[in-house]
Amino acid sequence: METLTLNPKERKNTTGYKSYLPQTSGSKSVVQIHAIPTRVQARLDAQQAAWILGFSEHDIPVLIRCGLLKPLGDALARSARNYFAAVDIARLGESPEWLHDATQAVSQNWQTKNASRTKGQVGQESLAA
Image (cartoon, rainbow, N blue to C red; front, side):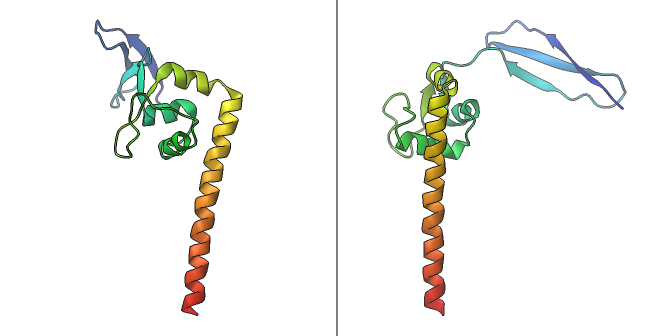
């Protein structure tokens, strides 16, 4: 059985990332973990915000529509890419009240969508009969 240990080897760079090069005790190929961030960017995209908050990326537009998340700038168009302030996302992720409200909003959104799909399928089945 092969053991894997991580040894941090800092490189002089401007990206704010530390490089971790794993070493193995066997002669098999070495798995590489290229970079682990040591600081968070000031501006996060929807995928990063979703990961920090513990939601799926497709839940982010629901949270925006419900007014629970506010993107930076005027990215209100559906096709525009939304960015969020990292400090706001971190603050929201530490608030049990906000997490409760956001979870309820996402749950209610999917319940409504699933109910409308079910009604549509029932209507189509009755027309076919």
